[in-house]
Image (cartoon, rainbow, N blue to C red; front, side, top):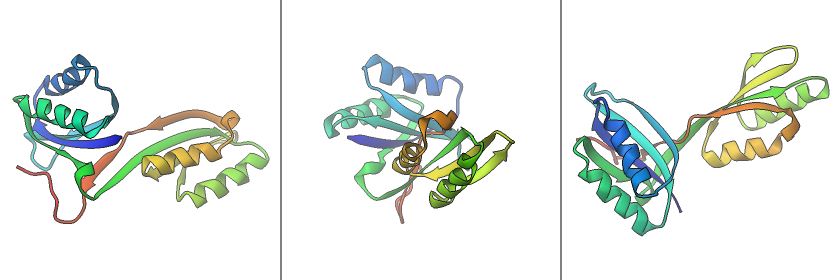
Length: 163
């Protein structure tokens, strides 16, 4: 099962490598990782997407909580949450493909962010499933390059990750 873990950790040199090391040392895979400073300059927020059953994710959470730099860890899957991911797709856009790409981009509420006479760069934001669906509608021959940020998530309503 796919889990999104959200962590607050001290914004220190080497802290991220210790989190990554914990995953690799135990043979856990990270599907995506995003990290940024928070409103508190001394803290960073990490969003880690991983796969595993509830027992494995509970073990990961316990191991993360043992790291000195980690302040707090929550599994967003334990309650309702909002997830978003950003994807940029550079596509070949010539002839009849140009109009079709614009139509598909509009359907998926994306935006063309760069245009040349032979290509479009399209931005799509949403859940990982939405981005996968957009890619599956495109002819593989026209996809030149794809870049994805990985998921970012936040609890819904009153649920917050703060110290």
